[in-house]
Length: 391
Ligand SMILES: Nc1nc2c(ncn2[C@@H]2O[C@H](COP(=O)(O)OP(=O)(O)OP(=O)(O)O)[C@@H](O)[C@H]2O)c(=O)[nH]1
Ligand SMILES: [Mg+2]
Image (tube, rainbow, N blue to C red):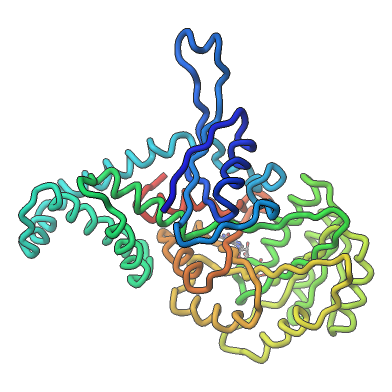
């Protein structure tokens, strides 16, 4: 892993510097404002320091394709914890917490040490520490396969004389890198974006549409249209109609692909078209095929772009999530939205599904309130949670 620091007057400039040098796959690990002390304050301006990391294997991406997710335009949806108020501080807390565990779980740790008969005191502590982090990740339901991968990669990269501090930082950074750069909805001037929301029943597709549409309509002043192909339940149409009325957004209810195409053409001057679909059980592939038809065969004008978001509940069992991803894997490019983070204590599935599908993560929803309970995924926050932080 390559880690570099970039300093500039503003956060945006520093992030751009990181992207120029390290490419689009660079992950921003930490942003801090550096204030000069004492007399220096009078002569020198404060500046922003961005720490970026990159997996060494990753190819650099041409600078031209500057990652829009990191530009001002696509800042976290609802002001995410902005200056990350000193990740180091949180890392310290994590470390304290895990060290505390070392003390309280002394017996378990002693057993482990004895079992492994580790002579060297320093590596003994490191070993104990890694065992605890390992268990922490497993407790948070990260798939054992991925925990082994993370720990193995970290172990390989450790330098002689590493302490628990550097081990924790390496694991934390590794998780963030594995989560990847979030890819969220952006508006491209002069283009109409058709955005499909697909997924199992009751995961929050319609609610998520309402949350996102209200952000783009009310905060970004974009022209939005709704289409729903969920005509299986009367209540489903009424649910979206209610949001459409509140937001003053037109809604088209479509029963066939021809009606869908007509609706899309009617909205061809709009900025975004949100398409709600009926919840589909992963067990019923035939029903899923119907949705795939809209995505694959629906009209796509020259000035139109298409994006698909697979909505999943973070509270769904991992085994079921894998089946769902398998079925929806028919869609070539999709991004992941996780809902109901407020209903689970372990977020391991987010990392598991990301690594299993390779699909980019986008948003997370943490409650039923429209429009507030949604934000762009915050990899740092999830990594801290996986490592046991209870913030
Ligand atoms: N706790 C919690 N509830 C949520 C969240 N998102 C949605 N819900 C609730 O989940 C229920 C189902 O939400 P919908 O938006 O109707 O889900 P859907 O995927 O459109 O459902 P179908 O169209 O029937 O497949 C509603 O009661 C929502 O309020 C979330 O992030 N947390
Ligand atoms: Mg719905």
